[in-house]
Length: 85
Image 1: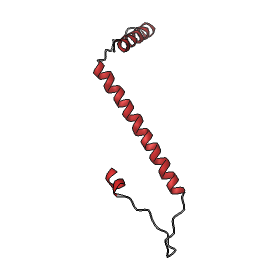
Image 2: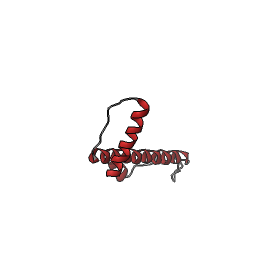
Image 3: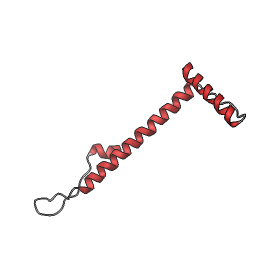
Image 4: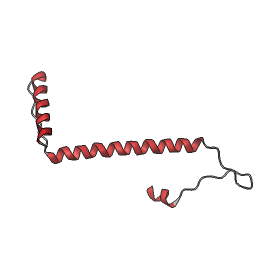
């Protein structure tokens, strides 16, 4: 915790010397943890969406299944998939 604050302070000091006199920003440990949680959440959502798009793309590439009477069948959502919506 202290090392994160120290490294942030050091970075700020370096930035301040190169960019002039900007106000110093101090973050609490709670704010840092919240930001890290938000970043992890966003990355997980992006990964989930990419996997979903890849699955949908693979599903679209499959030819339609034929039923016994020769007509193409359409996929039916399971109750689990519906609950996710």
